[in-house]
Amino acid sequence: MFVRDWLARRAVLSRDKLAIIDLTSGAELTYRQLDERATRLANYLRQTMKVQSGDRIAVLATNRAEILETFFAAAKLTAVLVPLNYRLTASELGYILEDCQPKVMLFEKAFASMVDELRKSTIINHTIAFDDDHAAGVCYQQALADASSTQIEVEAFDSEMPVLIIYTSGTTGHPKGAVLSHRMIAWNSINTNLAWDIVSTDITTVHAPLFHTGGFNVLTLPLLHIGASIRIMSNFDAAHVLEIIEQHRCTIFFGVPTMFQMMLEAPRFATTDFSSVRYFISGGAPCPLPLIEAYQQRGVSFVQGYGLTEVGPNCFKLGLEDAVRKAGSVGLPMLHSAARIVDADGCGNDVAQGEIGELWLRGGHVCSGYWRDEAATEAALCDGWFHTGDLARQDEEGYYYIAGRTKDMIISGGENIYPAEVEAVLHAHPAISDAALIGIPDLKWGEVPVAAVILRHAATPVEIIEFCATRLARYKLPKRIFFVKEFPLSASGKVLKRTLKEYIEKELLSASS
Image (cartoon, rainbow, N blue to C red):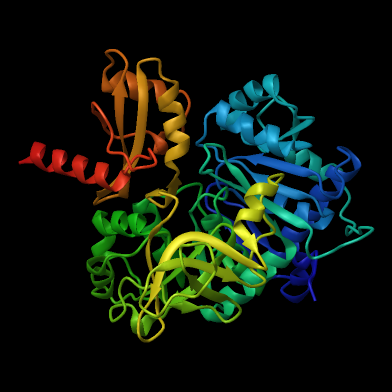
């Protein structure tokens, strides 16, 4: 059975249990208080702003308790939350807003000027300001005070109704909205809590951005589902994270390898008390063995996993006992997750053990497709199997390894960067006739994007990067520009990016020697 308003059920079962501490505002909420605030917001949205089932509710803010309150309010109404990436430019956000057409936008004052700009070019019917001292729009706290605390009832509910849309960068240059249903959220929690032995006494930090599946769905919702406790940080800061782990006696912690590396390099790492931590969870990219060993020397073990916004994201688990023995593996499928590795010719035949093919996943934790994009949905979903686009293999014991990405996606510090999106911006520069983006290894970020361009007329690397900076989020910007006369091409005219990458890495090696 799927429960639309499971927070209300949790508020009964764990009435006075501490659910959330917002480390920025200092707010502490029990499950009863969290449910009451979400209920008041839902009533305000329904009665004052006429939000109905299926309407989208956008939020533009750094991590804060109000984002989760808004999520649960949306779930109560069978509306849909769309958390926006605050690192994007106005033009990037404008595309997303035109695509999802939210009825309401909630925001914090740091992004007030961005909201004002967006309202000039996109349709936003209503706004709510989280911060009391912001004069524009409805005040969030006042809205809650004015609203009823009567529990929400809806005319109809189906577990396939969407509750969350998370936008990911698209391989065609435009972001796509992954549609996450009530059913998907529930099954991800079930898989996560069973596989990682999560219990109601667990405590974790929420430091990954809540516009990202890593912020919402790796640990946050599963822990709230089971009645555990979270500490919300506005953003990731290595020294602050170490401080919070020690002070709040955190028991589990999720991060991407870049985060773990930054924590390792922080001065207080050597003295941080990790005695409360049962394990760290690493995801987003393969975790290097030296990093795992460095933490083990401090008495902390790793579990590793794999997933993506559209599936889970928690689909695999590599247990503590295998962290070193199977370093590089993402482990085995979680209890309610099915996996296949199929041939690359599109026939859907399973490859032999040890061979590389495309990873397909199936289960209740699979998304419903992409928002208003039938072509992308049909390409990704077939007979319940989600085609991840990632290449994988199995070893002789059945453990899975990710071998590469068929979509040329670059992962830098846990953020996905799709070359087509950046290349489209580069191609818009008047001095550039052609461009290609590749990822090169980086000790801190795992990978960083660099661009190779063919010029029409003179331009400097600084000019090109500044041009991109007005159109792309900072993490997507090429870190280096290489000028080439021509690209290595296949017989069909496609750029041979592996060959191009080898050339650029040789150039970098030569320059450093």
